[in-house]
Picture 1: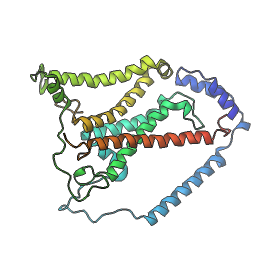
Picture 2: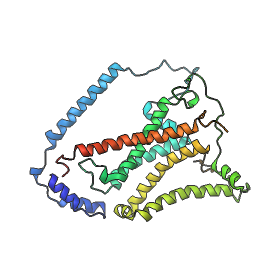
Picture 3: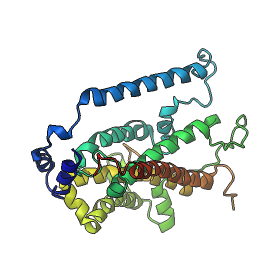
Picture 4: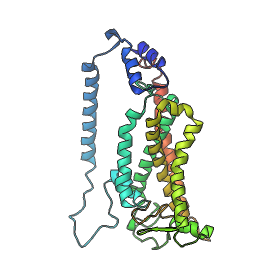
Length: 284
Length: 46
């Protein structure tokens, strides 16, 4: 299997439609003498893996009971109220994004993005063997998202205390952090003050009073995506050619959105910016 | 000027984010590179 498979992957065209790639791969004859049977070779290994996993979970549940608390009471709401650990990453996102983004849009993007990976990735490299060298962008991109996910969980589990304030391990977890220590401001207000822009609306669309600084924030927000879509197209044309128009735009949309999450977090942390874009209907 | 290390720990949290993400990425990529090297002679590749 190995010889034929590697030769076929070498002779694959570097660009073209996914269907062509599949046809080309399928047309290479791989004789039965170079393959192994699914049963028992694969299924046996899977059975062993399942048994090891079940035994491990059984052992863990015996030595470490589930951290169940006392019966819930309407009189005493726990502070902080924490989700199960695997959801704490999302709960931590609520610090930086409104609930419709942190709880609905971002998780949906994550799920759709993950589901799309096999469809937007036409490369035969790395199939059947481990490689980093041949898949640098994919692995760094995925690794970054995964790392961000785990860092957010880590923060939620170990660094959030009373009132969802940040507590270092050396802070007293029973003492409230100072209230009102963070004074947040919207980006458009910041721009208005910094550039001395007029507060009067340029145009009013129903409830939406569009000011000069508001327009600027729109330009910056859309510009962020525009630059993200354009730069790889201009400087990494081979990347674009390999993916094709539709797949390139899908990949870049999810990639840019993913990069936007830590950027918004840093804008909030280091510049005290609450929203980068404000409309009467939604705020980002 | 405010003490940048005092609560709300802006800089500390920012550094934690960067370092934490890099450490996790390093671990993930490290495992991939290690597997790549360890299984190089594996006949499923070449």
